[in-house]
Image (cartoon, rainbow, N blue to C red; front, side, top):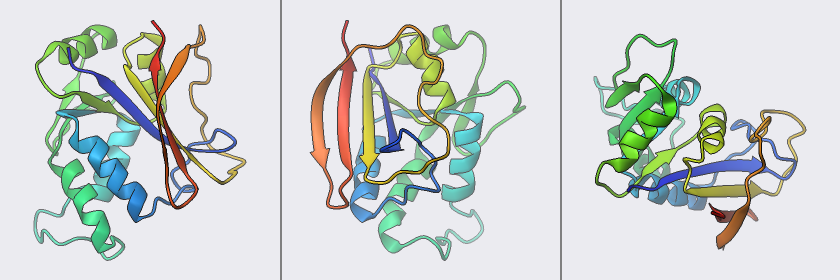
Length: 186
C-alpha cells in the first residue's frame, strides 16, 4: 500500500499562511525532493487553484514568470508535471494533469493508496485535517519556521480525538527552520 505523506510550513505560533513564510533555495530543494517521491499529489480546491496559478508553466511560451528565481524552476517543473487528484464539490472540471476525486473521501483515498507506487503527497490545511480525522495520513512533516505570524489558518482545528505521533526524523535548515517528520502511533 502506498504511503500518504503530508508536509506543511508552519510558524512558531502554529500559523500556516504561505504569505508569511518565504521559503529559500534550500527549502525549495527540500520541497522538490518531497514532491518527487510521490506518484501523485492530492489537493483540495483552494491549494489546487493556488498552486496552478503560481506554478503552471504557460503553454504558449514555456518561459518562467519574472518573479520565479532560477532555483525555483525545478520545483515548478515537478509540480507542473505531477499527476494531481483534486477533492472539490464546487469545481466542475480540472486540467493540468489533474482528475477530480468524487464520492466518499475515505474510500476514494484508500483506493488511491492501494494502487502500486511510491506514495502520495497531500498539501494544504482543510483536506489534510479531514484525512487525519479518517486516519489516512501515514507521515506528517511540519517545517517550523523561526517567526511568529499572529494570523492565518492553523493546523487541525477541531480534530478529534487527538493524534498520537512519534518523531522519526528531524532536519535543520540554514534559515533556522526545522523539519520534523512524524508517523502515527498505531
